[in-house]
Image (cartoon, rainbow, N blue to C red; front, side, top):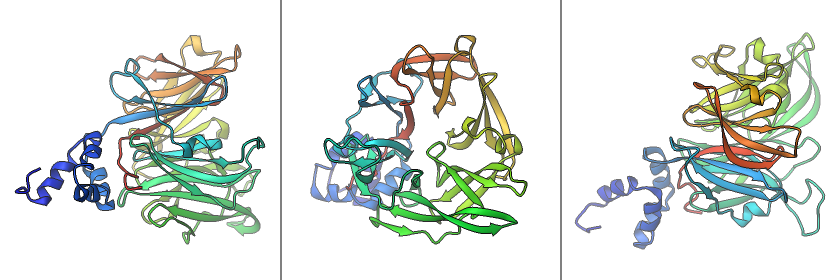
Length: 384
């Protein structure tokens, strides 16, 4: 680019480049590489770029229990568009007993264990989290201490939109017998936050909902904008267990509570699912007898004020199958895992709310192995 063009204008032009071109421009000169790799440029590019693609990262296990990762562009061509094998870094491949914690701003966070060859005992070894950007093939492995099983900590993951700083939240419970609002609390909570910018775990000073007795994790974690959400469980004075939503603000690092209407709060917890739909929080309520899902969304951010948006009715040919909601597409279609009793496998399908039609994507994994995570192209971790 000509030396006669002011640097400020050059930067504005570079910010409008697609990511693949941007990465190529890093090799033009050391000053450009230094600029593009800077945390300020990464944050500005992440916030200002409007042409970033939306993708779906799909993970499943093949018959040999090998974990497979593929990416699909989430556009109008799905399911006809091309499935792209995803390069998986060693930091992810080495994880054992791994789970996907969550996705945010193009990053995927996983938790698992690094262990010695020949050690096949579950949940042993060095506990690790890996933050991974599948698009630019960068990842960061983070040691996690104080992980005890059974139970173990609850995790949350999100990227602060104001700073583009990835954060991991770890929540451990400790026995206690305090009373709150006339209810005996059986647990207290210890919260630690890891931010990639600081590279350290630190105790959170935020007040935590003490009346909480359980986290429904990893059944529920979802990141929307600057918040991480989980389902929580509290004991009512009547002795009944009630579900609520716990939030964590990635900017202020404060916890909050969103109370659900009784129709959701007192429903079977194994049939409630927390999801992100159209960049907003949603709750799915499953009716087993009718094999249908009700999609609920909050109204105006008011606690207990939820409205039922629509109902997912399973077609007759799927009535005798087992379904599990996985992720909403950008257009609002619901991706699900479908299985039956004929074999130890499940199929990835997409449900279209308007036509009530189900499309099979032709992806089959071992039972309970399918995970779908939506993400947007990002250059976060480019400087790692």
